[in-house]
Image (cartoon, rainbow, N blue to C red; front, side):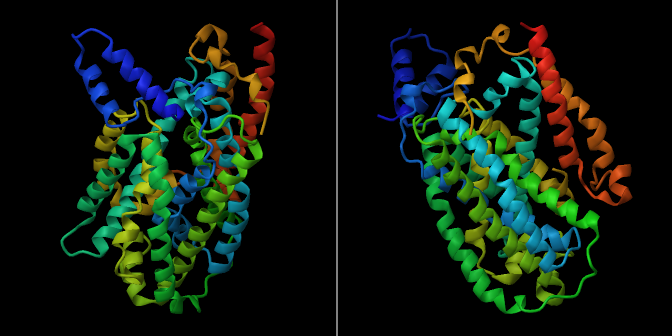
Length: 446
């Protein structure tokens, strides 16, 4: 019996041995348990329950999550939004994906080793109450990616049907994602192990059909340093945004497995999917100005679904692959069968509005594990105060704001020609501040 099966069985037995006067939530939980729906929340999974030896799942869950049209749209932003040529776009994608995929893969090791989900782990730096800050921000960030996923999927569905518009397409994609997420961990890994197959077939056919237009590209001016840096940080941000949830998909996997094996399964899952589809998106977006049908479908760079529809009309399969990216994001919310429903209610109306300006929406949005004492995860007095993390976080805004370049605001450093370097400068300053402040915090909290 796997760890998750044992956990659900124990919970069901304890509820069945209770009083007859059960509350409605308890009755609902018992009913869902009988159907195999995961009900576990954020409680760390004990070592004895981390027994799943199928480490290859760590590859497929992230390969499928990035092998879809949202990654296509991310790559297409190089030519369409940042004004880069095909050569510059491909070189930047190659370099940034090789480097940035290391970061979520590193955090993926924490899942099997600690059995704790990403936001629980943040308590060991931010403290019990301080961790509310990154947790809330993470919810907003993940909800933003859900919205982007549904926009692209809805646009793609609408591009191949006269009876569907983007609004109805968004609702369909959201509903499919909810079905997968609602069932929990086991269903998630099963689905993600298969979701990439129709995507691969569709992308290969798309390349075969539209490849003849990828031989010549319109000439574009040499890029400025700001354009190169902005697209590079945009790519990095799209990849490292997964870091907060990569541990969540290994919390039932073998705690004794090699850290390097876990790391490389996760790294290759991210790298092979992200790089290939980012490049494919950049190639077709760069070619779009020279092909009238592509340009009409692309709608001046604001309708990725329309571009895909113009390349290869039978794109329903690709659009229906969007749940492979939505499901992991929705699953991260807890408790398992409640928050996906809440998430669904939020993302549908916001995605419908955001679809009107896609790229504006898109751009804005192996260690010593014994040092983590998971017994302390829910005991505020035993966790750090969190002042060092909070001060480092807020202190970094002093450099992030003048270094950022977004649709709605550009800081003086970015406007001086540096481009959107807020992610990089903010990371360096926050890391430096935290190392100093944490040393002081540990000294005075002893």
